[in-house]
Amino acid sequence: MTLPASVHRTWQSVELLIAFHKNKRQQRRGTPFLWRPKDAMARLLAKPDDQEAFVNLKAEGDSEDVQIKFHPEKIVIRRDQILGWSGIIVDNDFVRVKVDNIWVHIKSDGSVTVENDAETTYLEGDGSIIKVSPDTEIMVSGDGSRMSRRTEHQIDAFTEDGFVSRKK
Image 1 (cartoon, rainbow, N blue to C red):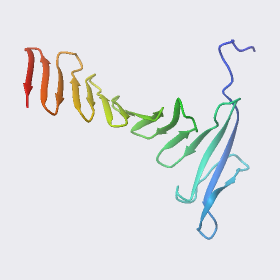
Image 2 (cartoon, rainbow, N blue to C red; image 1 turned 120 degrees about the vertical axis):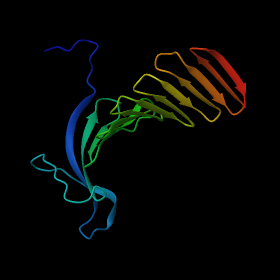
Image 3 (cartoon, one colour; image 1 turned 90 degrees about the vertical axis):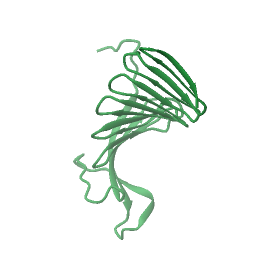
Image 4 (cartoon, rainbow, N blue to C red; image 1 turned 30 degrees about the horizontal axis):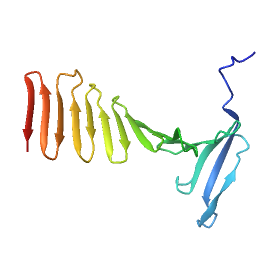
């Protein structure tokens, strides 16, 4: 089978590893001891701080390797990448993605939160948008019928009844 020209290989091999963060005397190691299970089954017998199971996905070419870490309460996918995504956390109630040092939270109700330095933007399940920064708070209803901007000194709003602007 030949692959189309637009498709290229992104990884070359997968390796299941268990990282032991403590030795037999329960002392923390400087670097975890990595063990490759013979039957490719990982069973964690200690707390996640003491040991963790992960898959090391070897990248093709100049790309960064990807680690998929399996914790009892979440799955963490990470790579050392400056641009693009560098981390994904999958939980029962949300998915968080780190892209270019910006965290994007996707909750189980479909709402999305974007955290960028001091600014946070919320996209609610009903389509409404709220943007909060140190200087301004902006709200837009899901149907676009209401918009407001609040600053330290002024409130401006578009409503179905008209425009309102007031100094505080």
